[in-house]
Image (cartoon, rainbow, N blue to C red):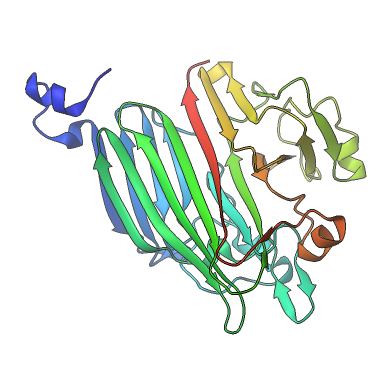
Length: 328
């Protein structure tokens, strides 16, 4: 296996940037003005934009120069501590390879007593602290801490770390969520992973384990049962479909022989539900594969359904997602 130290000893490299680029910059125009970016480019063909001001989520990703992620009509968003309410989410949602939902609610906007929860929660609007980016033993490590808090209320701290092999083509995400309050805290986490053209096209397929239980979210989604692993050409104004996959091995893939590319996603056992978002609408053409610990129904409905987990005071839970790109 190649490594930078040996390549330098053998005389092939004189600067590690020939194998791996790691740099920070700030966007300076449009809606995203002021947003920080940590760009990682690997010898394995990955180019990744990490977004410290947006929950340390992931923006655009390219593999061997070809786009893999879905970027919404809204584009990259600027840092902000607050989140839009009601359907204003639709005017801000940037897409990107990873948009994290949570930490108090995922799914539709809802009111829980005196507390308002915007669609998919507030996590993505929070800036990371203690951000660090370094190369360590042929692995790029990007890490930070994201805190969602309230005076007289919750203190949820997420320690987030990505590991990207310099000579590989995968992104390994590890999160540890801790309740630092002196009372139990309900929590929800959604890894909203979004894939777009040219990985997603009518030539592509989704691979899911044969042994699984699939539930459509809406009557329209039910009309797509049996077709959820296929894609069609963009359809003007077609409604989105969402399926919930459960009781299955925690892996899925999208492969597209036309561009000779395969994306594989795996996740930890404490994310029991894979939400599968399929929008074939013209201009909103996307496939989302979204490991989650809830059914993304909103905080109130999840509690009523008995599917809103709780962390005891100072208890932690660790979750993991790995996304790997390669040839078909």
